[in-house]
Amino acid sequence: MTTACLILDIGGVLELTPRTGWDAAWERRLGLPAGAVDQRLEEVWTAGGSGAMTEPETRAAVSAELGLDPARTDAFFADLWTGYLGTPNTELISYIRELQGSCTLGILSNSFVGAREREEERYGFAALVGSADAVVYSHEIGWSKPDPRAFTLTCERLGARPADCLFVDDLAANVEAAQALGMSAVLHTDNATTRERIASHVAAAA
Image 1 (cartoon, rainbow, N blue to C red):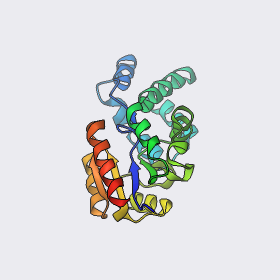
Image 2 (cartoon, one colour; image 1 turned 180 degrees about the vertical axis):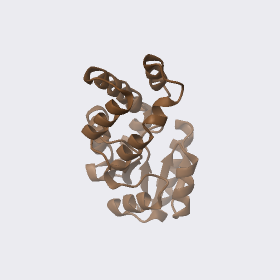
Image 3 (cartoon, rainbow, N blue to C red; image 1 turned 30 degrees about the vertical axis):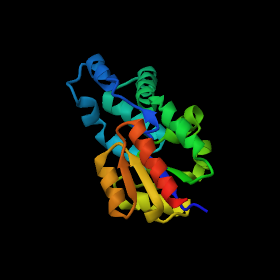
Image 4 (cartoon, rainbow, N blue to C red; image 1 turned 30 degrees about the horizontal axis):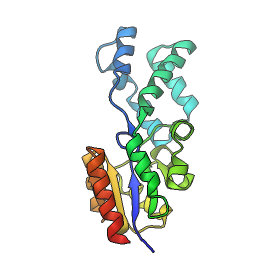
């Protein structure tokens, strides 16, 4: 029986999330200088990413920080989630679906409160990797990559040893953190290279 384990990031890997400029558009709309949205909402982004704020609390905080009425708060979050969710990386998702049953599958994603519900509705990641427990979000566990605790918890949930896991992410710092824990890791730059690396990992453990 194979001991191979594959853990994937979401944004930039399973989802294609190029910058849309939605935040800059809101800065122009509100007459704010460039970078002001992220600067004013830094604490909200951090708290929402670690689960320290609920989704209603993030909405209230954004409304207060940017001076938005309810309608514009709705519009702001609609733009935020459109950019956040991106579009599916259909080629890679289809390949991962082919691996079901041949290795242990999991997801580890830095996230924002509300992401699980929206991504599950749109992409069905729980079914892709076998269960909701195999999808690990920073806003639910309180730790974001590259914190080693996020990787350790994910391996524990999957019942896998770090040495048996291949981690795929589009950020070098996260790849390096996984490697420091004894995991194999690949920096995702294109589907062909990532697929080749995954196939080698699974074949070596078969």
